[in-house]
Structures are given as structure tokens and as C-alpha cells.
Length: 271
Image (cartoon, rainbow, N blue to C red; front, side, top):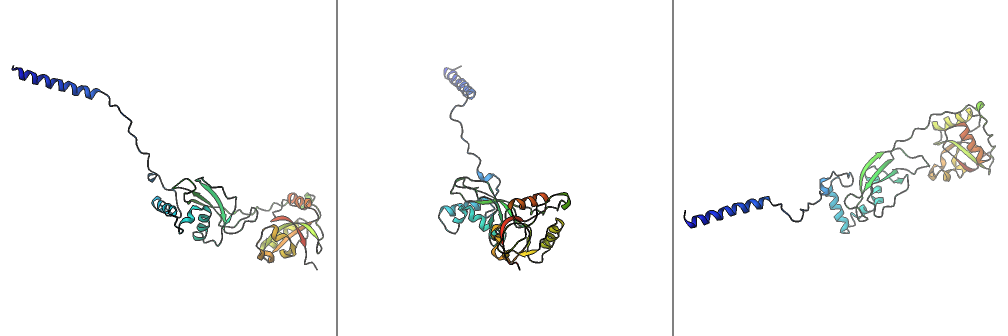
């Protein structure tokens, strides 16, 4: 074989061995960095005012630009107020519980709201629990979005379970006079002539008390104490009056009678 041919064959073999060695060596170098999954791939929880992430991102950009037409969405109170009025057709929104501190917290926050002012534990039918979150940006610059709405069941009045008068010792009621100050146990409050008032009068009789329907305006302090609307001063109440607060609560507890509330009043309008 010619010398040139042998040299060519040798070079070819060297190249094959080098290629095989190269394939057997592990590839070294910095690890490949993979981008985290985009939030766009996550399910979108928003239901109002933006139902899609792209719409919410446009709203966030609008707020960032300082546009007054959308800056309201940075304040959760304005989001709650607008939702109640535009989506629930409420004239005013009342909070049933304490509003949270939301400086940099993205939520979720659950707020109980009502279409009317709550009176103690009483609230209007149609009240809801609203869930809000900062879905686009989780700091004080992020916009608030409603992510949940749940109706609050209106509690039914408890079934009367009044203990018979003869089985318990109830305190004696006071004889009220004009200008006298007493502690009143209101068995019911409502519009004049309503069934609730008639039932309350019957309940008082069953307990051995005398109670008739009276205008709330004649019991000074009742409207303010129960945080009623001033126009409701024309409503009536059926109450049993006592000389002491202790007796008033004793009557309510011992009889187990359903009642609207207990408060101190000054009685007027007596003949």
C-alpha cells in the first residue's frame, strides 16, 4: 500500500476515536435557567370589575398612569361601594364588621356588607359577604378585585319557648309615669298595627305582664339606643318596664322570651 494511503487511513481512524471520546464526555457548564410559569397560565379568580386577567392588567396600567377614571380601584372601600350600588342596586352600603387594615396586604379579605344599617346582631335581608384580593400586584399599588360573593342567610326568629309564669319567679314590672326613667325590655318593634306587635302583646300577657303598643318617640332614648333611623320614631314598640336594669335582664333571661332589646328610656305621652 502506498505511504500516502496509509497516512490517510491513520488520520481517519484518529478522527473516529476523537469523535467517540467526545460523545462519551459529559457536557459541563452553567445550568439552564427556566422562566417560572407565567401568572397568565393560572386560573383567574376575579369576577368584578374585571373578569379576565388581561382586562385587569389594563386596569392596573390605567391606575399606574394616574388616570382618575380608574384610580378608584386602588381603594377597596370604593370597590365595595361601587359593587353594592351597581351590581346589587343598593342605595348605600353598610359594613357589618370591622374593616381590615390593607396597606400592603394583598388579601383575600372577606367583608360582610348590608343594604341597611345593622342594629346589633340584626341585619337586612340581602346582606352578603364580599371577598376582595389584589390579583395583579400584591402591594399598596395593586388594584382590588372582587373574587367572591356569598349571601348571608337571614336568621329566622327563634321559636318561642317561653317558660310558664307559674313555674318561675319573674320580677314585678314598674308602673310608668311621665318623666320616669326605666329599663325597658322590648318584646317587639315594628310599624303600627303589625302582627309582630300583636304577638308581643299576647306574649306579655302569657308571662303575666301588662304591655301595650306605644310609639317609640314616647320612650326617649329608645331610637338612639337601638340605632334606628329617626323616621322610625313613629314606629311602635311593645315593652315591659322595670325599675332596675337587673330586673330587666332577669325577666328576659328567666322567661326565655324572644325580645328585640333592652335599654334605658324616659317615658312620656302618658295620660
